[in-house]
Image 1 (tube, rainbow, N blue to C red):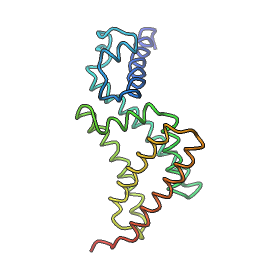
Image 2: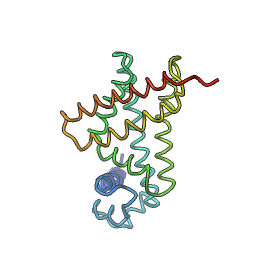
Image 3: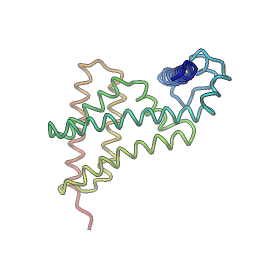
Image 4: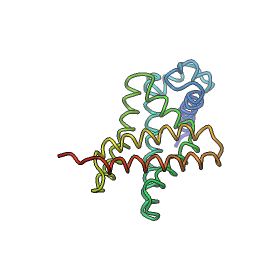
Length: 198
């Protein structure tokens, strides 16, 4: 890689990092291009050499969140194969992610409800990806009914707990983790109690 290419990549990364830092304070949808360029210590004209607009930058950030989450979910599945407990391993993996990547996680959650439509749709698509994967896993258990709804409720519950975990100390996160595991088990028990569709 040439020095010029390295510098270009470094500038691009500084824009991404600036957007992540600022989105942690006020949420990505509320950011302006001027705020991001000031934080990245570049001129607004330099921004346009890397991104068409704030919407394109947002989509790059969504891809970054999605890639990180998918890597984590693969890690969770490997843990499940070793330890055999899907709920515990998924919860531990998700809460680890939110603790280690608070900027990425806040971006994910704030973007689900605000900002440009294309940005919200991209995040909703990623969220749906996790619901669909969980649905496939749950659907393999013949004791469970209405697994599509159970998967959606479980993913929503994990998101809520993950947001809560960001603001707490490690010893408090353990309590959040234990409570979340109990909640997810209750959802599965409710799914077992549902009458199967005819």
